[in-house]
Amino acid sequence: MRSRLKSRPLSKPPLRARLVPYLLSLPALLVCIGILVPFATAVYYSTQRYIITLPFTRGFIGFGQYADLFTDRAFWHTVQISLLYTALTVGLELVLGLAIALLLRRSTLINNIISVALMLPLMVAPVIATLMWKLMTDPSYGILSYLISLAGIDGFRWAAAPSTALFTVVLVDIWVYTPFMIILLLAGLRSLPTQPFEAAQLDGVPKTFVFFRITLPMLTPYIITACLFRMLDSIQQFDIIYGMTKGGPGDTLKVFQVQAYVEFYIANNVGRSAAVLMVLWVITFIISNYFIKYWLKLRRRTHGISAE
Amino acid sequence: MNSPAIMQTVFDKTRIADLLTTAGYALALTAVVLFFLFPIFWVLLMSFQTNADILRTPPSLFFSPTLSNYAAIFAGKMETSTGTQDITFLRNLGNSALLSSLSVLLALALGVPAAYAFARYQFRLGEDIAFTLLSFRFAPPLLVLLPMALYFGQLGLNDSYWSLVWVYQLIVLPLVLWIIRGYFEDINPDIEHAYRLDGNGWGATFLKIAIPLARPGIAAAALLAFIFAWNNFIFALVLASAAKQPVTVGALLFVTGSGIQYGYIAAATVLSVAPILALALFLQRHLVEGLSLGAVKG
Image (cartoon, rainbow over all chains, first blue to last red; front, side):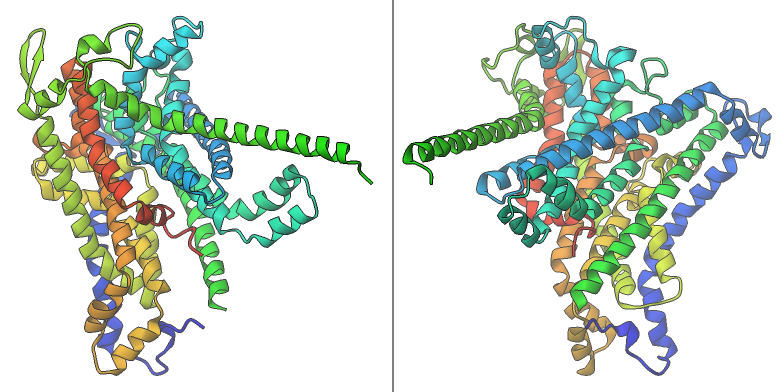
């Protein structure tokens, strides 16, 4: 049984004791309040016409900014490219991560060495990783440009061409974040009970059946956790895209945060930038709410089981 | 009944199948390792090459290694076609170390007591505060950063380490809080009860019993928070003045500033990731635990 301080006292504790938790969490809370102020400011800006270089036009326009956004094709392009980027990166990373985790499943010396080595890309700052890939995909001396020309493909321009820019940033994202999937799914795979697998092996159940009917269902909590984590990061991706092309060529890669950054610093349009971010915030709020609830449920369940 | 001859062929067949599986398995693993480690290896090689070596076609693994790229960065002077140019990259490295360490220390000071409160006491607002803190981890950073940039500009805070360290709490504090909270919850409170019954106050219990028991969790959280702070780009890009920029921002500006000096860029890249990779390899056991943010712990 897990007894806790919180469930113990029968009579009401003295005021001083009841204040302890507030006292302990107060400093952290103060930092949060400091962060809530600019957040409120952003909400307020999104209801304003506010262009830094044109201060005299500043004024309250209610939902005008949003109405403008929703009728603007450029904004829908931002929504579309952000969702496409998220779907591609999370989907591919899940498939690759799961496959690699299955390869490394048995805890042998070589597998363990490899799984530690595979952690390295995740430790590289995404923007630095982007620089590394930029060095490798440079059209004049990049090793990858050279290798791809050996394969008979000439004039492959990686991030410089609108048709291959998305491919290039997705590739960098996969390089950086697939290890995250591997780590989580490998931890999951290795923590699964062994009896169902031993039984299936004794009965001579085919491997595909074992994978789809035993492994995958048992791994689902880990898969959902990893995917939600990655989705929240991916829909907000900034470092890789900004580092690679600053959102270009043209508007090709202007995802939410890059678009907001450009609106703010290039167009000086504070109001519109805030509105773009508010839309992104609503999306992430929905995902993270779902995520936190799912996670707390999972946590309660595992804790419940371990307490019995 | 199988005759020995048939037994032999069956045996051979399974052996061949086994060999093929092993070969396929080894091939797949090699491809995986190649894809994930080649970029690091290649950029490391580039950092020891002169620009002439880098620009050679076809690229070659054979060259006479030079330390000139690193020497230039440490000397702070770079030779370009137009003359010598100053490199501030060393200062970026110092800034990264300072900002990350201070951020982690502050996050521990704020986060450990709060994590203990969330784990041990059920109090009004407690869950709300914890939830709000966690949701910060997932909110779009620019939403907070852009208004903050305007405030910082008005208040003249851009040029202060402390204002950056404060904003960095947005990344490190939720992390510290949630990992350490999980650890406190896993510690059996009976140990603390026993100590309290001996007549010790909650303060002594917290400092002398709870914190030492949660030390592995605190280490994991601190390590991960340090890496997150070091690798962060967008916060410093928006908020830091030129003199306070960490390596992530510095390296990107360096690329624009140095033009086609690829060897310098490669060396700068290596210097920005080396401390983190060394730390990660050294403390990798803590890392896996921290990365799963307690979610995988059962």
